[in-house]
Image 1 (cartoon, rainbow, N blue to C red):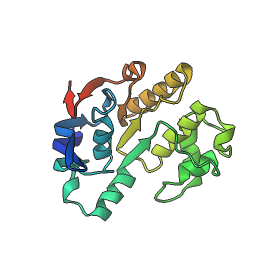
Image 2: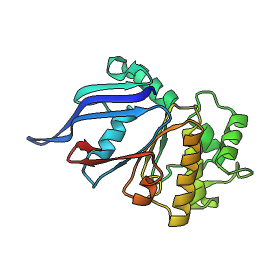
Image 3: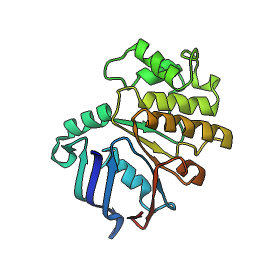
Image 4: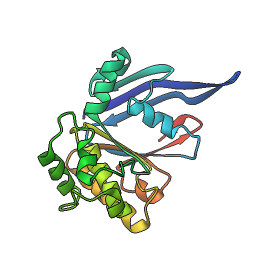
Amino acid sequence: MTDILDIKGAWKTYKMGAEEINALQGVNFKVEEGSFLAVMGPSGSGKSTLLHLAGILDLPTKGEITLGGKKVNELSGKEQAHLRRSQIGFVFQRFNLLSQLTALENVMLPMMKPDKKKGKEILDRVGLEGKYHRLPTQLSGGEEQRVAIARSLANDPILILADEPTGELDTKNSRMIMDLLTELNKEGMTIIIVTHDPMAAEYAQKTVQMSDGTIYE
């Protein structure tokens, strides 16, 4: 199968005063098209840094990133931003919905070409039929995360990155969200989740562990 994401020899170094901290240490990370991967590890292990590189929210201090066949390091800042917006969907732990916007408006917000019909179809796809005009305060936590997942699909991405997608949910809603992500994966979506939750990781086809900026499979 085709590698949708290939991170080679990635180091990420941060300066803390006179000290340098290596958040990633020569990480190699490949994700095949259509796969569902979980990344686990303790706080400070490098999970979030890896997700930021995968989502082109940051670049490695050393190393290369290829997404969808495009070498990210060789792109201009504008090209990187376009690739990030058009090819990657993000799902966050705290939903990050705009409280003054309806579910439909939140889904349409990142669209490169706003389309109400498409927004409604995506909300239907995640089980929110008829709740297009509800505000986040009128939705349960599980429903809010469904809106967030719908928003991540707005531009037909090739990759979804989910950062602790069950972190704010109870067990019942956590399973519902993971069932939804599993269905999207079965439909062909490539998904990476970063999680502390062993239950959530069980849904993935493969789990890798991180510790001290290094990946262990």
